[in-house]
Image 1 (tube, rainbow, N blue to C red):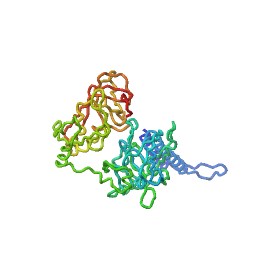
Image 2: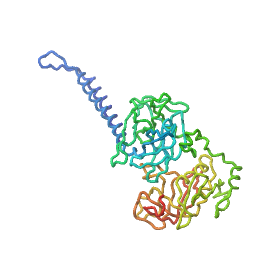
Image 3: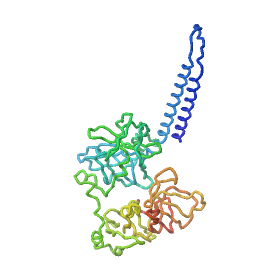
Image 4: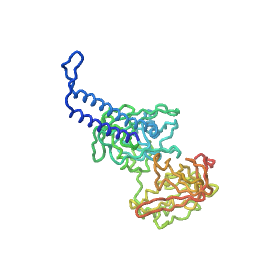
Length: 463
C-alpha cells in the first residue's frame, strides 16, 4: 500500500509540475516594481524556479514515504533473522547473522562456518537451538545452509524472489535482534538502493549505493513485496558484498554432515544418496526387518515404491538412516511423524519433474494412527468446522506466512466439529497417503480421517 501510494504520489506531483512549468513559461513576462527600485524587473521565471523547488521537495517526500513502507515491513519479517554462534575445536567462538530460508534451514556465510565444530542459533525470542548439520554449500557466493530442529510454531522463512532487483530499487536489510528475549526486540535495519547488477554464470553481484555496516554480514535484503532479493557475504579479500538470492533456487540440499565432520575434511557432496537403481532396491529389500513389518511392496496406488531401510533404535523406528519415529501406530499410541519425513517424498515423487516413485518410508504409514503438531488453516464461512488444513508453516490463507505444498500440508476430516478457530495445535487421526495428480501436477498428497484436535500435546513425552 505504501509503495502504490508513493508511486501515485510521484505521478500526480510530476504531472502538476509539468502543468505549472508549461503555464509559467508560456505566460508573458510581467514587470513588477521592487521596493525602492521602480525600474527593476521580477521575471515569472523566478516564480517557476520556486515552483520547481517545491516539486522537488514533494518528490523527495514521496520517495521517503516509499522507504517508510520498507521500514514498516521490518517487524513483520525480522523474526526470520537469527544470531548464529559458531565454536572451533580450540573453543574460539564467533558470531554471524543468518536467516531462515526453509523449514529449519538457516542460511549463513560459509566463511563464518569454516573451522567450526559446533554451533547454535539464537532466535529473537531468546530461545537457542543447536545446529544439526550443514546440508549445502556454495563457496563461490560464500553461502552455507545449516539445519536445526525446532517446534512447528517457530518455523519461519523467507520466500525467494525469482528475479534479481533492478538498479534504483530500494531493499530493506535486517540484522539480528539487539536484545533477544525482550518483549520489544529491536533489529538494526538499513534501506539501501541498488546501484548496479552484474549477472555471471555462478552468481549475481548486486552493488548498492550505501556502505555496508559491520553488522550486515549474513543479513538478508528484502524487496518491497517482502521477498528475499539478496544477502550480505564476504568476498575473497574479506570485504563485504551483496549476492543475489537466486542462488538459493539452484541449491541442492543433501543429508549433510555435522560441523565437526565437515571441518574434519568430509564434503557435503559425499552425502548425496546413491542413484535409484533396481540393484539398490534389491539390496535394501534383502535387509532384515524388525518383527511385525512385512516385505516392502513393489507398488502403491499404481506407482512404483522405493523400499525403505527399517530399523529399531532405542525403542524408535529409524527409517532410511535419517528419520526417527516413535509410537506404534495404534489409537492409544500413534506414530509421531516429523514433517521432514513427509517432505522427503518430494525426492522421488514429483510428477512435474518426471519423478513417479513413492518412498515406502511414507506409504508404510497408510491406515495407521498418527499425530502431528502444526499450524491450522480453517474455513471462515462455516460455523461448525468439520474439515481443515494442518500445515508445517503458519499461513493465513492469503498474505502472511509460507503457502503450503502438497508435501507439508494435510487435509483433515474431524471426528467432532469445532466452533473455535485455533491457529496451532495437535491432531491425531488415521493417515491416508493418496497422491492427487492431474496431468503433471500434484495437488495433494496426505489426508487424515477420524481426527481429533488438541491444543496441547496429549503425549507424555515432550515432542
